[in-house]
Length: 526
Image 1 (tube, rainbow, N blue to C red):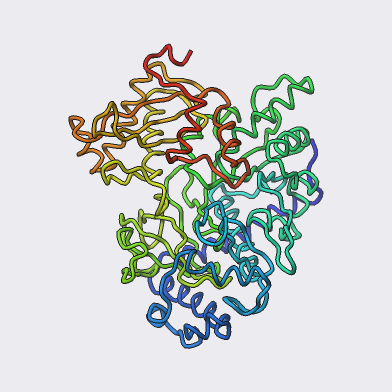
Image 2 (image 1 turned 90 degrees about the vertical axis):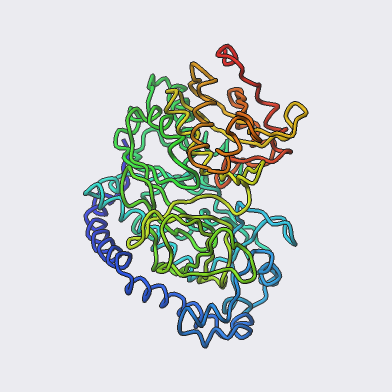
């Protein structure tokens, strides 16, 4: 089995650095004064750097010495409000939001309905350096929790988009994960897979197949990427092994030292049963919350438990607005050290790339403060709502997890839609589309468990479901094997950054329905 040259020496060094970093991090997030000082220092540094830009002069950023100063001078803005600045910067204009030329713009998986077809977000050299440090923080949390850095003695394999650049004049369009692959620190560069010729294959399905076949004999100890792609990739690895005459049934037989998956982007629990089955044993999954706007914002700090610990000192200043006030002119704003537990907040950031008071469109909730552990709740757009119940996709993911546990089945992918005017009435229902790997013995029980979990989570849904007063029981549709993948291809989403949508609108629902059939009895799964 192939191992990277010199990798064995990295583990002890990483362990020492990780221990020191985690101790420092813990002190910051556990103390109100430290946390405030660190976050204000981040804000002042970003404001001072941008003071002489067009935006900085217009908002007097050079005079900002406190959060109160900043809140007075800089209103919160959505992408649409920033877009005129960003479009000029993409044309090569300097000193607009950030000093000099921003060479890189990352295309976000979100979309814009204004000037640009997609969101293109600035990534400065300063932000790249902060993201490198935050990337180490994910590793630091893992090695200190398991008590060693042994996984660094082998290869880490990344399932990310290509790192190719689309050059327009002096500016390069890219994606954030791909760009970071171009800026991997030299000590670990030779431990990372795949190599550039495979990494930059544009067709993601072809890329996964080629990568799977290329590294069967390598000592892969970690895999990174969006969580929903792990099981898809493992299927291709097993298929590649069998094509070579190796009768293996689990990933552990090929990569016995695989110890951790660094994931993110979606709730992992719905995929865990499938992932563990492919690996052949339980495997640690380290989650993180990240965004193109500033990199990694929060990281798993307790294995096997929900909640992600905030990263307060990696170049991003955070603000939070109660979800009901999102995008309102006089929205109540609070800093990280001012948030309360169990309140849904819309998150805004001020970054080392010139986005100041920028709504990223995410909703979060804090499980605890000091230390600040958050959970991703959903998007400010993209909820299901028949009667103003505003069901988030996180609630849908939790309901799916409850149904899977209740019926001892496993799923490949799933999504939900809202149907109004059922049977000519004024009532509506949710439509649940699921591609099962192992179907439930009783589909009705599965749908019932899903429904009961939503009732437990969402008060308005529960009230409007009671006695079918306004919302009827969910309808379950079984997606044919491979149908999820074909659906993603048909709607043009087949890159590593693009997750299977948990909520679909009417148009996407109609596309997905082509690969599904209603399930009214156990025989419907045959």
